[in-house]
Length: 77
Image 1: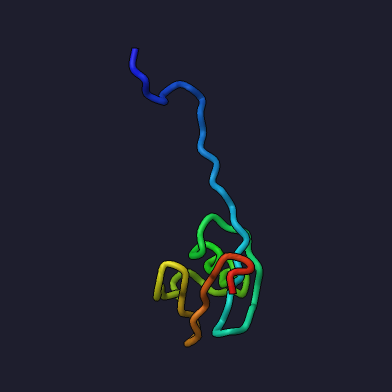
Image 2: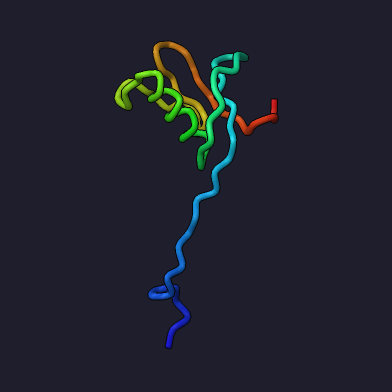
């Protein structure tokens, strides 16, 4: 019998981290998310931004309406 995970009922749980979402130096939101990018997306969606209006500029940053929003782990700045 193989040592694979199939049929063992093991599931992976995504770790959620607290992130500061910033626009420039200004703190605009605190978000709990699996990744910094997800934190920014969730914040922008809460502001009414559609996915088609967001442009990725880095793994942790998106552009919307001419402003760049980025997420960093809580307390890192």
